Length: 216
Image (cartoon, rainbow, N blue to C red; front, top):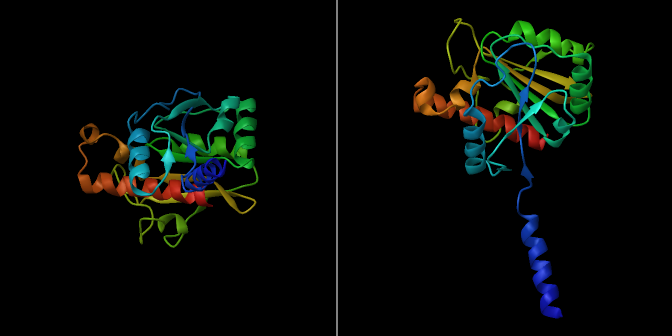
């Protein structure tokens, strides 16, 4: 009996050192925009994070409709695309409840999303504004240090990359990467022909986002 007790105790202690398992999801939305852009990006980000920052994220991400109750199964949502996006009234209420209840949304502008996503997020939080994050913000100084803030991954408009946060009750509920295109940098190497240095930069910033979210 004593041996069994010791084995159970050791198992409990061992399990206490195993990081919790998460699954993250890609957001599917209406409006005609390509929510499915960058199909390999999350897979590569998850693999990188699990190998380098000690996360235990399910290697397979899910795809979830923004109006679905399944949204609440995932602590981290990723939304991307180039074009139009529309939240219905019920979808607006659903994503609001998700974010207020502790969820997190990463919006990654794949160039062309900005003018569509901002009005939709304003519907979600009419009283809140996106706040540009300075290079000193902790999200840029997790496992990996980005002293200049959000890195530039793909060049389209010759504009500087910007990172924005949306805060509800002092908690960041949404991180918006703009003029950067992190998702392209996360994709398989042969998709965009990025240098390995550029891909590593994108993956490290993505890992920082995950680390910040799971620790805030």
